[in-house]
Image 1 (tube, one colour):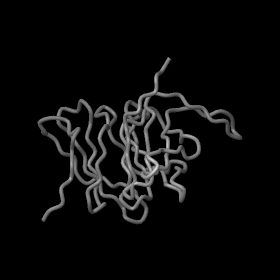
Image 2 (spheres, helix red, strand yellow):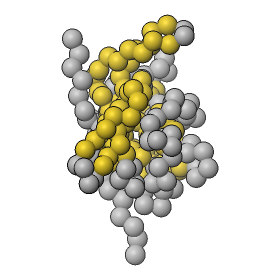
Image 3 (tube, one colour):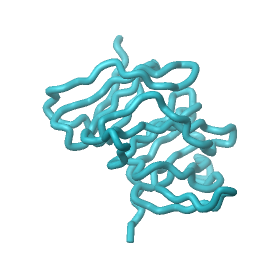
Image 4 (cartoon, helix red, strand yellow):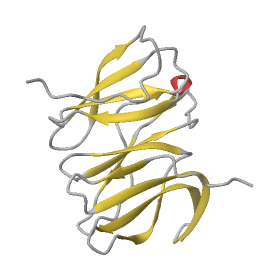
Length: 178
């Protein structure tokens, strides 16, 4: 049996909401078309004064194994990096989920880009200007990818693949230039 693991945790920029990836779980939802199963992302309201998290709705079903999460600075989207999910061409898609007014998540929006699954996308970092996302890869032998974030739609556009890094950028952080 699979045991769910909470690997990705991301706060909204205003601190009101928390998103947690349920890696390696099997969550099932009944829909009009039948049962749908998969890993998931849970949304929580965060009440700092009460020191309490409150679940918002039911978990959002994702593809296989959401490893890392990132929230856009304007709190419009949650991005999820899938570990080990690939299509017939051997690519994984970073999913983008709209954040609803109550902090819950809506269905994934198809993304017009993909990341080679052999690189195992595992780290997502959005720069302070909210214009770029850096994607690090688990076991990639020093490869990361830079994407431009469309300010209107949240779509990602590949900008650059960085190679020859000393190690996978698990602790990548953007620092604003002075």
